[in-house]
Length: 75
Image (cartoon, rainbow, N blue to C red; front, side, top):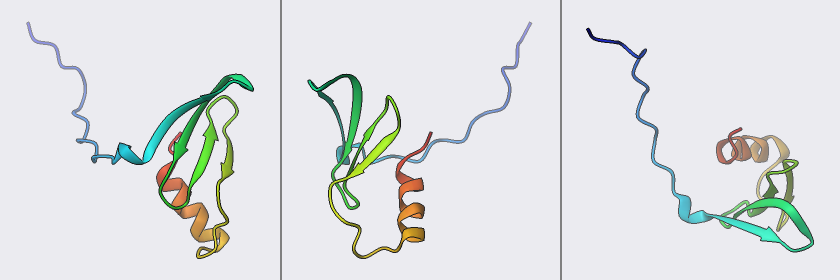
């Protein structure tokens, strides 16, 4: 007897994880932070999804920045 387990999923595209770091903070002991070190540099708190940019996004307007962030942050 053979059992089929649904359709095959496409192979995920490779990510460059060297630009993302996992961090914590003693001032926020329940927070887990992801630090992105390429432009645009930011820190996201996974507990509440708060994003803090480490620099001003000078070269991108708001719509371009939103498009760039959608490619970096996938919920």
